Image (cartoon, rainbow, N blue to C red; front, side):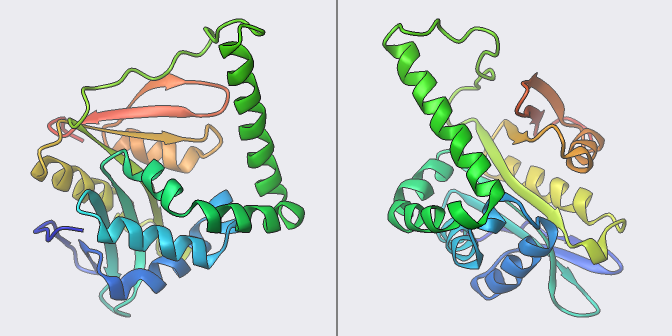
Length: 226
């Protein structure tokens, strides 16, 4: 990640740009925040590679909350240039395939996600071959011009530290960093059953632009008040 002046200070925590030495604590934090989530089920190694990838690429935005009493990472936000997600998937493909194949037997969440994506891939192929009708019920979310928006991939606060304003502080720091890098808007996607995250996004000024049976897409201008 490029050097960034983005930081937030409170009486009990600091939001600062993530560094390599924070990665292991970010992984531990992720596993505590998202137990049973697809990315957690892929294991610490996958999360470690993902966090490092976003840290090392100029387009990545990674910020962490440091607890002033313990000096440890207790929350984080990750995102940045939207293409990074697919670029990481291609970069990590062989390890990802090996890990997801092994976890397919042990994890119901991995089986659910893989089955869904395989079925969606088959439906997409059948629509392309005109065997199935074109998908019209749930259109793709409206796109902004390339290069004008950042993508928020993940944000979370350790269960032991919730209710202290860290989530809102991270969201504000992500907005400020996106604005500093010249982005005009920000986007994110979330599962519909993640009510806590949706509530946080709405409180921080994000607006839903599309809702499907699988998830919702939110958007916010970097200039809009929270």
